[in-house]
Structures are given as C-alpha cells and as structure tokens.
Amino acid sequence: MSASGDTSHPDHNGGSRKDETLIVDSPMPPHMEDPGWCAWQVYLEWPGEPGVPEELVDSTAAMGLLTGDALWALSVAVAVFLLLVDLMHRRQRWAARYPPGPLPLPGLGNLLQIDFQNMPSSFQKMRFRFGDVFSLQLAWRPVIVLNGLAAVREALVNHSEYTSDRPWMSIYDHLGLGPRSQGVILASYGPAWREQRRFSVSTMRNFGLGKKSLERWVTEEASCLCTAFANKAGCPFSPMSLLKRAVCNVISSLIYARRFKYDDQRLAKMLDLLEDMLKEDSGFVPMVLNVVPVLLRIPGLPGWVFRAQKAFMAMVDELLEEHRMTWDPAQPPRDLTDAFLAEVEKAKGNPESSFNDENLRIVVLDLFTAGMVTTSTMLAWALLLMILHPDVQRRVQQEIDEVIGQVRQPEMGDQARMPFTMAVIHEVQRFGDLVPLAVPHLTTRDIELQGFLIPKVGLGPSSQALSDQ
Image (cartoon, rainbow, N blue to C red; front, side, top):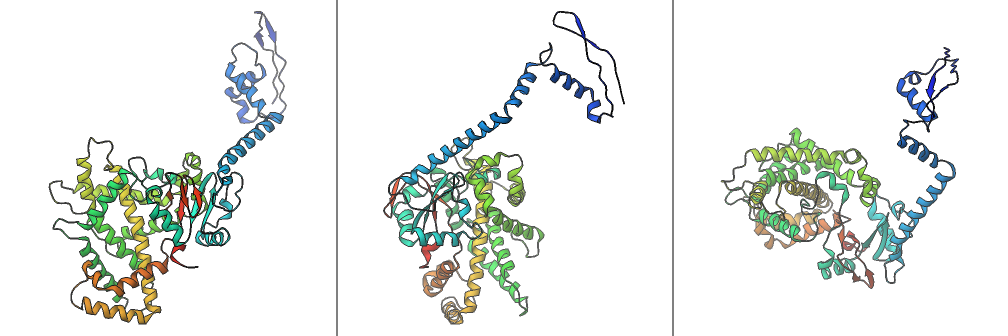
C-alpha cells in the first residue's frame, strides 16, 4: 500500500506549514492503522506543539533517564542502599557477647545455609560447631537458636517473663490473623493471650454443665477406633489414617458437638487439607515470605502459595455458620463454640476484648492444627514402640488390668494410680520428638543467657533438649 498527500498544520505564528509526504511501501501492521496509535505517534514526534500534554513530555523524558549511564547509576545506588541496610542489621552480631553463628550472606542472611526440609539436622550440625546457643540471620531478621536442657530451661523458665512473647507471623495475615484475632498459639504475650488461654483451659476442663464431657467423647471415640481396628480381621494395614480420623473427631466433638463417620467425605477432605497445610508451612518459600513480608503484597501470591490454608479456613467458616444457626443462648453450651459465642455476646461494646467472631475462627484453627497432627502422630509412635518392646507392652497391660479392669472405661483420675503407664506415655513423647522445633518465642527485653547477651530477637527452642545427641 502506498499513500501520499499534503496536510497543513498551524504554526506558532498563526500561519501554516506543510508536512512531508508520507509514503508507505509495505502493508501496515493492524495496530498502526488504529487512529489512537497514529495520534500517539504524532504526539511523540511534536513534543513542542501546542496541545501536547506536559505529562506526556515528562514521561518521555523520564523514560530516557532509565537508559544507559543513568540506569547503571540507579542500580549502583540501590545496591549500595541495600548493603547499608544489611550492615545495619549485622552490627549487633559484632557486639560483645553476642552468640556465634554461621556467616550470613548480604540480604539473604543464612537462608541458603539451612535445609528447610530437615531443619533439625541442620541445627544439630550448627550446634556441634557453635554450641548450645547460636545465632542466625534470616534475611534481615535475627534469630537465636536454643539447644540443650540448660539453655532452654534458663530461657523459658528462669526468664519466662521476658521470653513468652511471639514474633508476628506475617504469612497468616491472609487468614484473618490481626491485632484482635490472634488465637492462642501465635498470640502476643499479654491480656488477650491470658484471656483466651484461661477460657480454653477452663472450657475443656469443666465443659458440659451436665452435658456430655470431653472425657466421655474421648472414651467413646477410642471404642470406635478399636472396632475399626478389629474390622481389619487380622489383615495388615496402616493405622495412621484411622488414628487421624479418631483424633479429628474428638476435636470436632469439642468444637462442634458432632463426630463424623470414618468414611465421611467431609472428614476425608478436612484431613487432606490439614496435611497439605503442614507442607505449605514448611520449606524455603514460607520462610522467605515471613521474613520479607513485603512480598505478600504481590496480588494473588498468598492465595496461590497457601491454597490449602484458605480452603481449610473456608471449611471452618462453613461449619461455624451451620453451628451458629442452631445456637440457642438460653440453653447450656453444647461445646466450645457455644461457650465462645456466649462470651462474644457479653463482650459486645468492649473494643479491647479478644472475644469476637474473627478470633473464634483463629481459635478453632489453632485447636485443629495443634491437636490433630501431634496427637495422631504420638499414638502412631506408641503403637510402633509397643510392637518393638513387647515386655513393656505386657507391663502396661498388667497395670491397666489391675487399676481399671476389663469392664469399665478408663478415667482421668486413674492416672495417679498408673505410674508405669504414664512414664511410658512420656517416653513415647520424648522419643517421638513430635515438635522438633517449637513455635518461635520473642524476647521483650535484653537478657543474659548462658553467658551471652541476648537483645530483643526471636528465640527458636529446639527439641534437642530432650536427648543427649
């Protein structure tokens, strides 16, 4: 295609001038035939003409600054700035009596020196090199790792008043974690945490007001579990799936006053999501997002990285809504949710109270995540160790027969008369090492620990306090 013609445009003096003839010898791309595109080209070629927006001229000039030497200078300036920030965060490592640790990389800290798929093994190697108390730098966040019984006891018992706080976990913000909805496990040490802990403990201990108690729920679920085992008719099977269903039913009974059949699809989905949540919480990516929370502002990123968490929370909301529809404030509470909703009604008008609908969601999430995995895993360890140590199994059975017998169900009051069984349970918990890395703590002031000066940083207690090696 070819085209030619004369066009006139007014000049600055009110006259006119002719444009050069436009000749196109090849077909124009479709976007070049668009009038808007042509107008854009005219503006770019006549930046000084009247009617040209100043913003367009400024943006064109600004784009020119981002090329060549200017772009190189900007890159150097940003790099220098980041290095200075990194040095500011490192300076406390140079302070006297600060715990030793591996040399951190600029910006990344020690993130690349930790095996996030096997963190206990990584920390054990560092313990052999640096001692029971050593420091890490996760990006720009300092962390002190505690190993050994003496160090853990000194920090969490002797200095409990100053080491009971929690660092803020930014990766859970998308679930609704906030200043007034911190649950129990991740709550900051203060009035809200005390209020929720007192409520949770008292509700589980004194639950029911004449209704079915938590103890009875546990014994009934144990009977269902034994029946499910017996139905295997001596065939080999993995007990883990049934153990998870039994424990999840106990927690569900406490929260929703209901249990699911072992073949219920909703129960199966809940367990699958809980397992996926554990995988989402571990690894390199969640750690980076937690120590560099600005990355969580990328649109859609939290929902993509933590899909199982969002899906599980949606199930929690669905079950809570079903429960709320049947709640009668005039009746005694059926479960923990009823008791919590009653406290929400009492706390209306009190902005400082931790009893609100948002926090109810987080408390329920805490009970499921903290109780289901640890309890079912501990039961699996108990079965395995009993198989490997039949002599211990016989002594436990003998004590059960002597104290409880073969007729009645066990009760919490029987513990005081069964020292050997309780010792076996405690040894299973120690040997199984259910939580090799405890939930992080946060110091609220400078403390002295094992001869080191610990500033206000995160503490990572390790379960290596439970073993010699």
